[in-house]
Image (cartoon, rainbow, N blue to C red):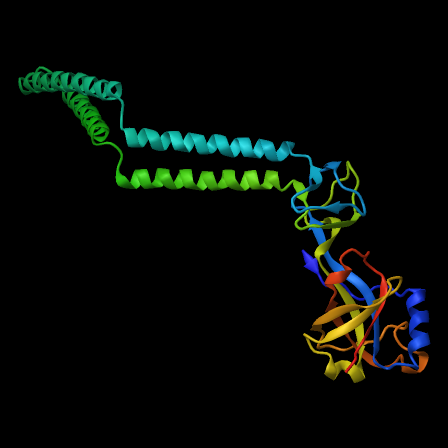
Length: 318
């Protein structure tokens, strides 16, 4: 994540430089050389097992900064893959239809129950005949009738089961199985992504400003574990006095002088804050410190090789 940071801390050389120039040129604006700061955050609370970078190291986009313990996330990935594979096998089974052995087994079960039903019917007819002659009681007849009804119910159940096997899965069943596979495939993708993000890499070409944790420490979820300086853009962060604000617009060209660098560099104003701030104590002389100023950023492509934080001054020449 890239943030705009407040102005850099005061430095003694910058204060001395400005106090010497204040009375000579009211168009001077002071500031520091800056780069965008990027905070590298973790998405898991796993302990750090390795750190591949150090403070001040230049890195290319994609290079590893540090890594967290992957054991827990690997187990979650394996579990998600197993559940997905089981759902995929079930879907394949529904699409293929029942095996021939299952169909023959169902047919045999139905045939056996048809025989049992016929025997139960014959027993019921004999029990009714004996009852009609007055040679048995009603309980015996009821028992025979119950056995016949139970046999018919089993036969009907086996017939429905055989029909279901012969017809195969319905379209709705196939859709449900496919949806289950899709959901579990998404879970696998998420688990794999969580595992990959245990390795923190440089998002852009830049310089490691500070590694904030050590090997073995367990950062909280969302914690910043390192800060990078983005080398893609070098700019001056300056303070524009109130009387110069109307002339400072994006696109304005400014000569910029950097401490310790001979000559001046050409800069272009990229952004000027619309909100005024109180001028920092080192930016104006004592009788002017109550004035307001505006933060501005001036692109300095020729300063890409210089370190961040150097004091500088820009001059409005028109």
